[in-house]
Length: 419
Image (cartoon, rainbow, N blue to C red; front, side, top):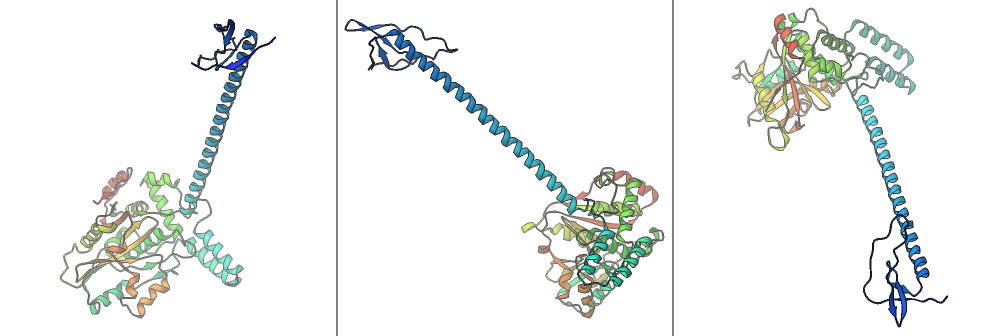
């Protein structure tokens, strides 16, 4: 049968494609030179044979069905790829969270890698392996350490005494650019050793505080016979005892109630809990944001000046006060404030013992104190530019009733915030 299909100029019909594979309705025939012509409802073609047109339309429908199926497959593929990407992202986030948590555990000494004793032994074993220590020296030092740990006392190998007394004499006779200086009751300097390197600053600062308290009859009497400086494991044990007594349950929970045998960092809250458990009246002051230009903390300096100069002995150039030193904490490190200078230009300068400074460096000051050696101690306003600082200041002794009140208050730990 002869048939012809040709392009028809004119209006193009765009009907909706039939669904479910149904046939298209028969098109209305047209005539040309007396011959019937049939128009495809889906394109611009016409033909003169209806069965042929019907086959042509069915080809259109098959093509639409194929494209629709391919479109659905593409959607399914895109959804699958998106689901796979989401799964990989969740797994990566979970791995990163686990790695970050493990990193924090290592950073804060809670990874189960041991504490002061294990770190000390490991360090000495490396020294022997590298030929820097004789085996006989290793065994001698190990025996000394085990004896010190058994008695709970510090071995004194990182301790430097007499610096505050030397400073008092220096300010009396030298330092013409200082108008007034206030110093704590005598303080010994302690630095971190091989056994607590990287995490022991809080404990060493407590040793500094205690060395000053033991020189002051008011506080020494309240310490109930604690006449020696404890070693770090003993300090850890004492903080655990404070938790068991009911101080700072949130802090105890954070450390799972355990510090001994760990390299856990401690901060202002742990120092406060330990001091309060020893019946010492103290407070935490939180300088939670800068109060001066360029991220400085002038309100911190003013508070410390008021703390040391409250006895109104400002007429003397050098005032050796009965005040204990102040514990100073910022992110990642802590130090001990032993005094403050008021210079002739009205600027203030803190005097600070840093447990990161070795005893060899500190002992150089006995050969002669001058501006260069004082750089180890001096911290001007522009030197303290961390976002937040906390201090723990001691100011008296607690009665038993007051101690109970403070223990109750520590159930929900709060600090005085400035500003």
